[in-house]
Picture 1 (tube, rainbow, N blue to C red):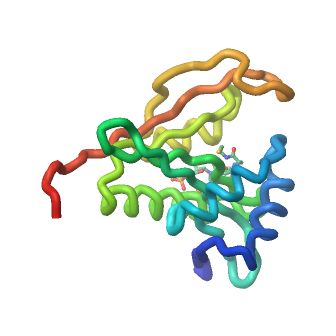
Picture 2: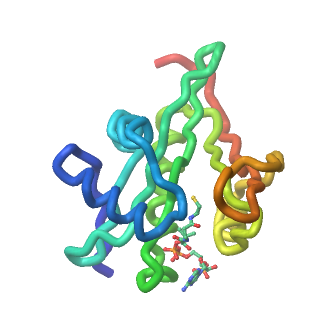
Length: 158
Ligand SMILES: CC(C)(COP(=O)(O)OP(=O)(O)OC[C@H]1O[C@@H](n2cnc3c(N)ncnc32)[C@H](O)[C@@H]1OP(=O)(O)O)[C@@H](O)C(=O)NCCC(=O)NCCS
């Protein structure tokens, strides 16, 4: 299948903006795009042939004590292109990169009624860690789950 991933750069930032407008009821601010750009390989656009149809955008968070967490800000695939393995390819990419870079946890927020996304993440070993009431201000329901996957961290320094 002709699915390929491409990094995010100033030149293709508009692709991510257009995807987010089509996919999510939330408007993302400049900080979101700055975080996505500075996450390096942790943010990827997915192309089906030559068409940009999906993306994963992460923010890396340095924790006290030195460990790093990856926060998935958004993961989405345009509806006509779902069920083709594109979401899997994007998430696997971030999981593999996280394992290589000794990331301790991958986590995200998902609206409590988003059954497709919750089932999707559970398939990859993510678990519901917490429920936050009134997390969203202008969508209903306003509640979210924190969905998380802990990764084995090796203490060996290279
Ligand atoms: C969650 C999401 C990213 C999955 O993307 P995707 O490209 O459809 O994922 P895949 O093709 O890898 O399929 C993964 C699973 O989704 C389910 N699925 C299959 N076809 C589907 C379809 N047409 N529509 C929705 N889900 C489908 C299946 O359970 C599939 O697993 P399987 O192949 O083992 O049966 C996508 O549904 C999406 O963009 N949703 C809207 C945005 C969103 O809610 N994102 C999550 C919050 S950040």
